[in-house]
Image 1: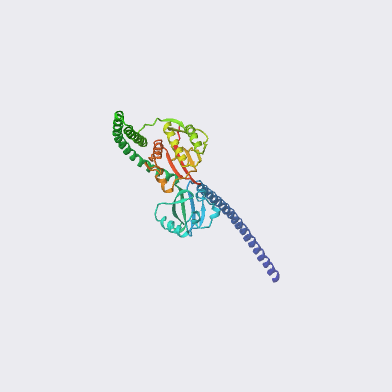
Image 2: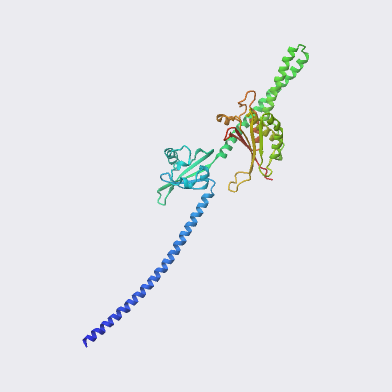
Length: 404
């Protein structure tokens, strides 16, 4: 009997233990299900976070690629970590080709030591750019450190800004200011000289009538010729000073160029010079004085002919810029390019080529290009000269387009 009670008690204990285990298992299943739901929620949040970060990464990358300035990011050792498309164009390299290489590989003739000495020491301390020449462009580079949230420096970012055109326009603006002052002085001097010259020519003409001997008449004739030559130079000086009021009208640059070229074809044929002209599509209309613009183009064409005494080729081309919404400060303009394969201009003379009375040819007064510059400036344009890639000279004239 005692054994039966013990067995019965054991079964009861077993049943209670089984019920307890079932209850624990049910609780465990419930907790497991709850954990699964939490994991699913966390996974969804993680996927959403990853997707948002990826979207943000793509968004930031699109912004980076849309910038008109080059951006290069490096680590603390100066190794390239990323760069945008504009930086690739300015440096002439691909991002994948320079990844994890020192940033100095982007720039010609610049060692890591020089790069570190110039950029890492200067630009993180001073808010100013450093100008360098790269592949025919002038770049202004700004540097800044990249800091983590705790303030520790983890790398550097460099902004590459192409200031080639800005630099040219600044030089032209300075030259225009100088020419304005010189022109005013030249006009005053020319008028002061012209009055006595007129008297000299008048009295020399009267003297000519009273002289009988041929030798004396020849001497007086030389005086009159010299006076006329001097008067011609004064006329050029007054033209440089810009005393004539322009007759403004809306004109087609192509029409003026074609008319000027028709005058020049015979001279070109005699000098064994080949002329070619490529015009941009459309009608580049500008506000200008037809005769003054003809003088600009004819002067540049004849200047090119004189640079090719043994013959050669003069190529004229027009280019058009109709504006860019991302650069609203630059108005639409047309460029006229004159490229010859003549003897060229020494680099040291390029900054002085538009200065009055500067000439490398004997027998000239050196006012031709100065007058061209003055006329272009009066038309609110700009002119630039540089050596050609294969020799010769390239003149580029810029005129603002008529917005009507």
